Image (tube, rainbow, N blue to C red; front, side, top):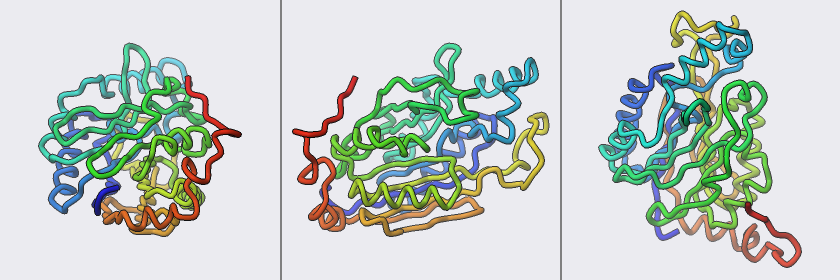
Length: 291
């Protein structure tokens, strides 16, 4: 890591089930982050066009009516390459990591896309294992993107939601030199933050955890949602130091952008005693086999 890098963690609600309007909102949010000096901005898991909350995704198992909801999600999902996403990032002129529902032929995937400031797609990762009700929505990922990329002064990479609980997936990032660890998620619990604090300490990297925020009242009227609190995702986004301390957040129950200036001295000081893929690793005893 060469110098101080400002990151933005964008906790925002999509324009639900509307791809083009959500990308337009992303354009505005990325522009705001850029105007506040961010080098990199992260938005939540499947921001485009919505994270499938279990309060409505259960309907996908219910015959023809569920198929209609899935079809609507599929029609509003992203097919790569997506010129709208590329243009939105190019206009902001910063690195942007965005979660999308990705459509390839008849299958949807939960994907993390990292775009360079010129709009080039620099990293493409699909969630390895959809969790619980998510298996009604997405296919399993193919293992691409389990690596880090140079974002200009630091190496960044990420995992999506509960695949961050997979030790070997984490180590795939560690051994490719992760310094800014991206963890977009829909888990809005305190226990998730416990996990991110552990990951920060284990990776000795900065962790940017961006969480889903969405309200039932923002959904189209024809999407069946189980009755309950208006908040389907209350956020909890945070930015953590390599020691597991909060640099910003957690932000609860509202939209907002949180920022932190990441200092290389903090990163290197944290690795003096523990470096999981360096001096505290025993590749002669333990190794990760990639396929």
